[in-house]
Length: 270
Image (cartoon, rainbow, N blue to C red; front, top):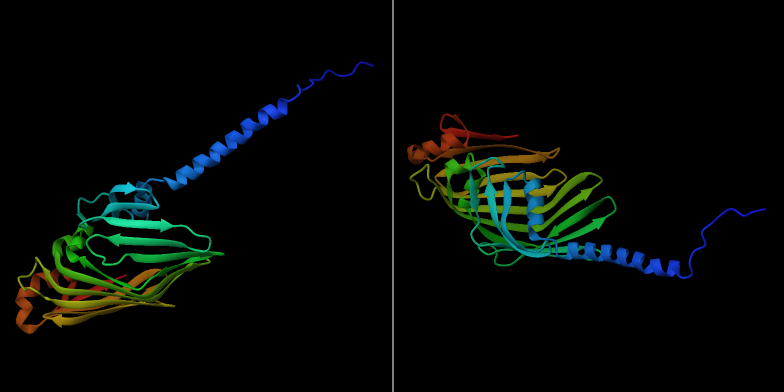
């Protein structure tokens, strides 16, 4: 009985095609590695802009995702014409590791030492730990955020300190530990002829329910308030009041800060 027709492979055919398959796979893997190693810095800028809904932008990005720099700009949002760029450049180094990744960030204008952040992934989440540090920032930079910052036009120095700060993400929930302290020193505004108006401290305390506290260190403009993050939303209530002899000099600013209630201006967020 005749056998069905079939193709008899040539000797060495498999051996001839195998190297091409290995070459293609190797080329693809090499391309992926090169893409990861040389990923442009502008990719990071795009991620940050999307996460901040356009309020934080990175311009003139240079270098790579792992080692680069850019100019950091605050804006009022994607469609806003308000913008303010931090003097100098923001520089970063990102280093991957088996158990944790490390990030170093330095701003030419504002950090004597680089911020150091360690990110340790775990099952169902991750932890970010910020090394204790202090930095100084120009308050004028905030005017880029739009209303009401572009109207108030603050002047003075902002000192930011971190103590044992860690952010945890686990099973869809976020938690902040440690303390962040922002001192606003010798503040002034274009809405008042009084210079300076005073110095203030804003403190964020982590825990099960993170809290925020605002107090006056010294000055004719008195600020105070408390708040907390509940369900991922900030709720804050406070008030601003001028010293009796400075009410006229601070009247315009009090009208902008919050809702006037006699000599006080009530501040409410959330």
